[in-house]
Length: 250
Image (cartoon, rainbow, N blue to C red):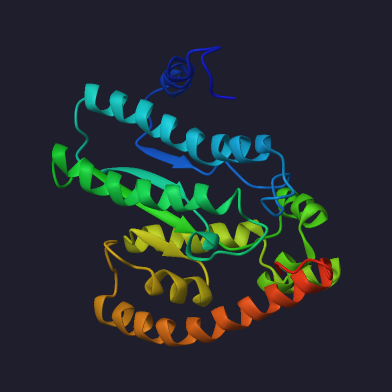
């Protein structure tokens, strides 16, 4: 997808210049409809295509847009870069072995980019990163067809389509929550309480929004996640034993 066959940066820059360099860059490309599965079962192409569609599409677009911004006069209000990671960036669910590292990379990009852009002034740019969980979309439906049973059990999507539609939010609802977070000025935006807990369980060097609240959420998450992680480990072991009853390695 992104090889030496064409000038990637040139094509992206041309698209961004078509009307006017945008003041807000939103990078939401990605997904994993055809790359779900366990590492021993998926082809190498699934790993490379997932990295291309989720990470390279983002970082190349950000790079080209940033160069256009730096060549243009500074605006009176900050320009914004909005990146899309995923709840999976805070988890290690079997079945998402190709997808999860790409979304962790997006989070690392947001952290690094946020600090790097301070080189150009405190109020020149703002970086945001959202972490949606599963939401109803064509990509989600396609992924359900290929997703291992264990993955569905762990993420809570092992149910009929009608039940999924009642449980999982739609894209419009998720988008509204992301916009709300942007309007509040949040750097990291979660769209549900579970993701908020997981985010604060792995906050690390990332900036907090509600400092005290986020701190205590992190303490709560560190206790809750230990229980959840042990449960996930047991379910994975049982699934492996049932899948490979003669394999002494599981």
